[in-house]
Length: 371
Image (cartoon, rainbow, N blue to C red; front, side, top):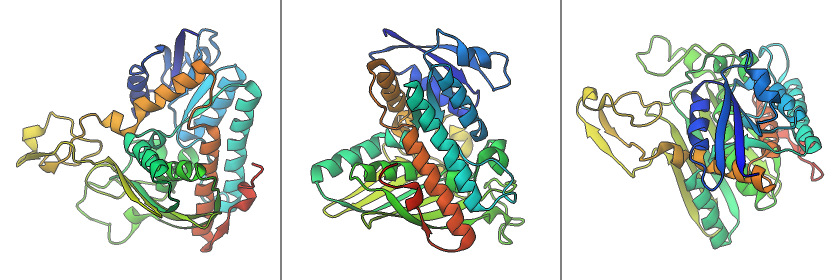
């Protein structure tokens, strides 16, 4: 294969990131040959079935991930699926968290099985696995040779722009799934390198924008969430006795906060995806830098800011697509595949049980050594 032909479905924020990242792949001739903005777009069937398309890249709302991924795999395509891999898409009050976990994991397992049966890659678009700060942390841990004892990770900002993310029936969960999946995926990737698997989880979820303290507040924090949480915290204990503490929030001012700290037996490593201080800027008035892009979801251009020289690169998007392209062309597994996405879904939905029932949840039924 001397050329990789990409068909994209989706026309929102993620599709822009992916399109830019595909164009930065080097060493392989990559061409985006077709784009459908939604599943209902008349071009979508062509993207799924066109024999000239090698990879279908899905940048659609969460509730469409599984069905479109299965359709693409059935058509013999490799597929890229945005996070989360899938979930349970009902109204939050329709099912218990335990029933939702069973349904979500069944859907994720179906994708993993379909990719295996089709002998095609399902690439899971977890950019944190590829982000240079996390990749450097992994390399330093490898050099240090110590064992990871604790991981702290957070993704938070002032709220989603996407209306589907405000409803469980289209999002499959709130901040813990949509934001927390990133540091959780990276943490699980690092622990998988040590051979560890999730064992138990405890959690707390809240709708802080519905709290009395938020009512009437003069704030740039977005609200309007129907039945999904805007804050979530989970602690996952692995079967080697170590832990990962993960926060996902739609209630944090100051731009996107993407951070991870790894505490090992012989080293401590901090990975700051965003913000980082490679560049710092100050403007006494927001109008001074009004037309400049500083960083994602920053509420004001006044005062001190930390504009990333190349935000997409620091978040790992070009590296992600480079790995996916090489996986397809060279016939080797991607670093982030459907199995990682499946495991993230299992832990997050286990956390929803823990938050609903107020207790520690045993994850071993979904993480047996045979799985």
